[in-house]
Image (cartoon, rainbow, N blue to C red):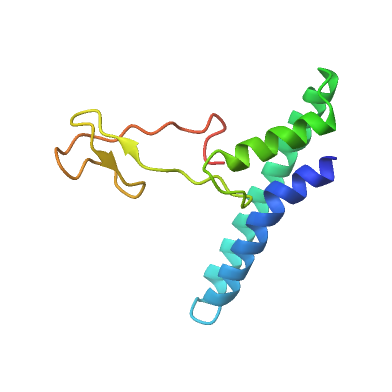
Length: 124
């Protein structure tokens, strides 16, 4: 089951990122690309370690593999699409309640700072 979790979360993103890095290889400096790949490998290893620790804790608490799989599918569907990705949508502006796209850090209408929920594990 742990292999399923690792394959489902890290594998999907790894394949996409690897393809993106391969396309960029034609125009990127070899040294820069090597550093980016090394950074990606480190981040994947970190995620794998976190997942193994979390799964061990869940098993100790009595969570079954079926329950974990169902929760992963539920999280995947939270954005309305079963695609193995978690897509962040726009947030409401605290100043004027307009929708603020994910790529903006300030409201395009009133200039209020955007406060987005941060992942509890930092950059992951």
